[in-house]
Length: 378
Image (cartoon, rainbow, N blue to C red; front, side):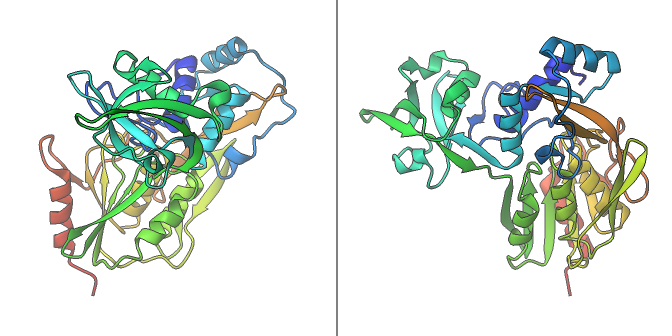
């Protein structure tokens, strides 16, 4: 799906800050702070790029001038951010966001209900639980607001997007009394990595996006006893290349993860040594597997470390570099492509899985069958 420069910038701001909101198009589902993984990442940022914009002396551009520049250059993944937008975007990459720690869902009946509550967050401490109905937010009836507006108000808008600001909610559990709660926003850690045992010694690790700290979270998850691993990268929209390379290091004992070209110069991406190269591994992918997630899947595939199962990936294989402008805004431009260890670029084509899953096939069950065929660690 092609984006206009303005559309790309809006998607960028939403994808890592709000999670899946407008982009799902679903009539039902859950939205909010713990949220779903980003459906689309604006960029695979080169190592350390998100924290160190490249051109602090850059000239000031108006938003219209920046968008004209991006359109004229044909940079599909380029984006322009105001200073505030980039601060929020960077915060999302750091794996933290302001909020009260709840997600909401809206069914076909139009009722807005709490679907998930972050443990130890403000909402949990106030006694809010999944299934509670959200009646009002800051005095306005929740069911009459677009879900995107409910999410925006939970996180705060403008000056409210800071720890310590407050939001007032009216909630009710079942047929009980209406409770009005005033909650104070805090900085919360996004949960991009989850782990669960599927039985017979199989550990499934799901990585939703590569924000700061994800590689460490994957290493921690792997400390649980297991004889096989399913690494689920479905719907993973990419993020920080450093974190994808670090995650590869959990399954490789050093060596190449790939490379990327930046202004004609090739830069190698190398996994840290000491990973586990023996435990049977299946990687799940789909059309929502993008960017850094494609690089990780392609590296494990090229090095015969994993069997890749699912459907063809999205096909984004470019790297972006942000430049700070004089007014604090940021212009993010594509500076090159990345390649898997075998020299493949997924850009425009995606990666083909080793074992394709039919449209109606249960990919989880297929992954377990493939893993069983690989045997167990001796």
